[in-house]
Amino acid sequence: MSSQVVVGTQWGDEGKGKIVDVLAEKADLIVRFQGGDNAGHTVIVEGKKHVLHLLPSGVLHKGSLCIIGPGVVCNPFVLLKEMDTLIAGGLTCDHIIISDRAQMLMPYHCYQDELEEQAANNKIGTTKRGIGPCYADKYARRGIRYHEFIDFDHFKARLKEVLDFKNKLFTKVYDGHAMDYDTMLKDFEAIRDRILPMIKETTHIVNEALDQDKTVLFEGAQAAMLDINYGTYPYVTSSSPTSAGVTTGAAVAPSKIKTVVGVVKAYSTRVGEGPFVTELLDEQGEWIRKTGGEYGATTGRPRRCGWLDLLVVKHANMTNGLTDIVLTKIDVLTSIETLKVCVGYEIDGEVYDYIPSDQALVAKAKAVYKEFPGWNEDISKMSEYDQLPQNCKDYIKFIEEFTGVPVSMISVGPDRVNNIYVKEIK
Image (cartoon, rainbow, N blue to C red; front, side, top):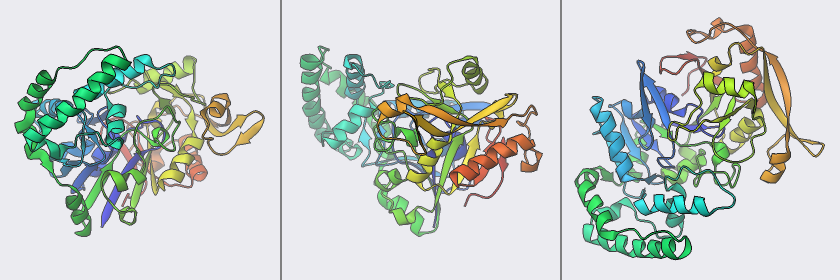
């Protein structure tokens, strides 16, 4: 079998969408295994930008079956809007299916997300897309799954039951307004004919493909440091965007996961709240933000920028079992005289070579840096590793040595063709 998992190794926005798009060319199935439409994956093909939120980033390859897996919380209205955008651009969407076990993200989840963030003293920095409340309902066994949409009488009863509960929460706890059942039901009636043909039982489809030695590409949203268990909790997402998330989010046994590709941005960014040890709150940070176009694909929010934190990437390797690194956006670092890479955290006089779980400790950390001379050569048009400046090669080599993971591919520009292949990703 051939199975490839693409994961982010930092806080997301590493360029996973582009890498999935590149690898998808040889894939039979592309499976999104967790998350929701709070993710934004940007894919640029022949200069045209496509921003995807729910759809797998391999959707632009019409020869591959695209699956929204059981671990995804899928807003059907957002999904159809995204599909309509692709169709208007001349692309096809008839190769998309939704797992009947996927959770249906509802309008009341978005409203709840907004109310909870407003009321919170310790704000998470949520995108207010309803992701957290939908996952909370899933684990409270209150969620509505896509197979429940097939029997519409059943769906009507379930919607009434849950909305009654939510309206009590909205009005009596958060001092908000009640949502109207009839209006919501009409909205779902209007999209039902388009959604129903996409709903399939996908567990057997994915596993049969693997058993038949087909190539299956698994795509997550967000990244290792936003993992609900092992990220910078509580400033995390509501699911597991690590390779382990594939086992629960796509119903694939751990023994069937062969290749885990970790996407590493050549510097660090994050959005939302939470400690960020290598953050640059100066002109250098602003320069990286502008040069790298570091603004959220989903929200447009400016991303916080900083030097590459290799403790974070090392942590990602430990929790994902990386077999390959794809290094992205290294072209952005061109013309910086001295580059810094974090190799340790100094906290109260002690140097840590791992990331503590307590974010109060991380908030006190000072980065221990190793410095590298930069380069001035334009690398964005280079296609061979030997063409890279020696200082750039030294930077890449140190990443490999520190993490213990080979860099198999280097992205030197935003388009799907702007890549340097060092070794084959199998």
